[in-house]
Length: 340
Image (cartoon, rainbow, N blue to C red; front, side):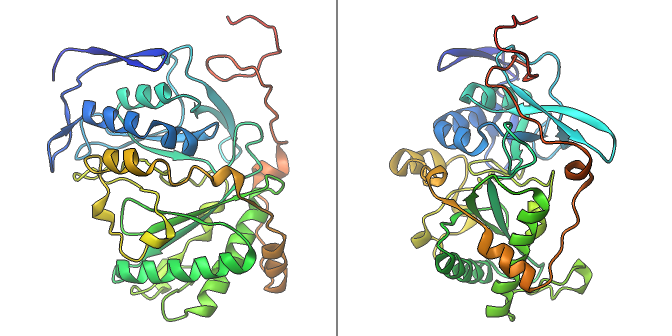
């Protein structure tokens, strides 16, 4: 698998073992190819993950082998890799999850066999207050990508009417995601209600394309589910620029709205994205400056009688406020307290 190498990643050094291990058999791309891809889109992937609890999807022997969903970072992580502690009330446990602030954090995670990065839609400063509303267009087994794009166009129409800016991207699979920055003033139940109300409005406009039936077995398989449940606490989806765990090495690629009608998911892989990024830069670079207040959607939710129940996390445990100064593992300490 090749000798271990050391990579200088800006001001840090990451040791990479088995750099020649093939991760993506369709084109023979290796662990080192994956690392070089993430470095090539460094600003973009860091912006997508910055200061968010992050679930790692690891493939220790490549994407055709075992898949490991990992929340907790190992104790062997470098001192400079930050984490954020999140609580899981169902199990009465917590986990210290990766909290990316530097491209070297991403490279280190890939060294640990991570292929996919699945961040929360809230940040470490207050993990219980989302700052990102996610519109997930999930096609049924008989739906086409052309239908996904048609529903995306309706989503943009509704967003424009609301005065919200949507940032589209391919899912890296058969669907599409649209992200909207929101003020971090509401909990997960309220944000899910807002997303639900939006989905209902889209369904009203194109009922032949969208089916919001609660149970999957009841949905028309030739329609799109606008999955508002992705805004529930601890639900995560692949970030912008995240590679997906398929043999062709597809990427969840940011798009301009004028590209949506013609773009195809297979166009965006770790082989094609570096040149695209070098030419266009991060198409989501302005996302943090386009913040939407969700009150109009909450009014729609009240009108439609939508009521999400508070999760145990928001009803039984207060939001965590994190100090500006963290340890390498991300556990809060008082300013001026030395590292152990």
